[in-house]
Length: 173
Image 1 (cartoon, rainbow, N blue to C red):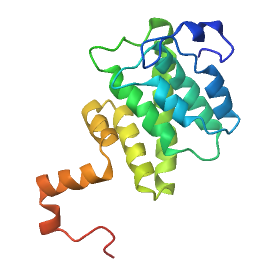
Image 2: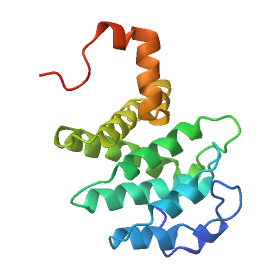
Image 3: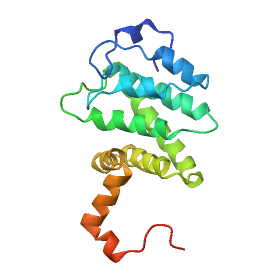
Image 4: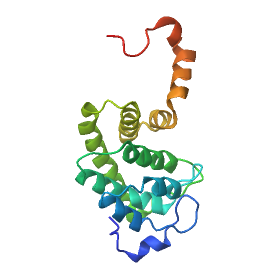
């Protein structure tokens, strides 16, 4: 895992395909500060991710593992990076990082499995399910789950399953 104090961070490209050093934001996140907006904005952009995005994943998993609670942001951001890793226009995970990156994905799976039974928030549950699909190499399912908002999910199940016509609304006892 690339240490947060390593000078190599400054040479890695983020989602805008320009150098972005997320180490300061990751350090703040580790201290409990809310830096999710910066990480979301800089580690991916319109489907683009870079080496900084990949290098941030092991750190995000390490930080999340030490936390008492995990935000939906953790699962969703790592999922977006993993989905976009498959995009043909994005670079592959660098050889020097591959082992740590894929170990981090396995670590996220363990966290997701322990968090899922404790969650009721729809966005958190959906983010965890997307992460689990991706961790199990179900890229298309993970991409679908991570990309839909609630209104898109409602529209999809109504179109494909005639939900409103055939099923009771959510929350039926």
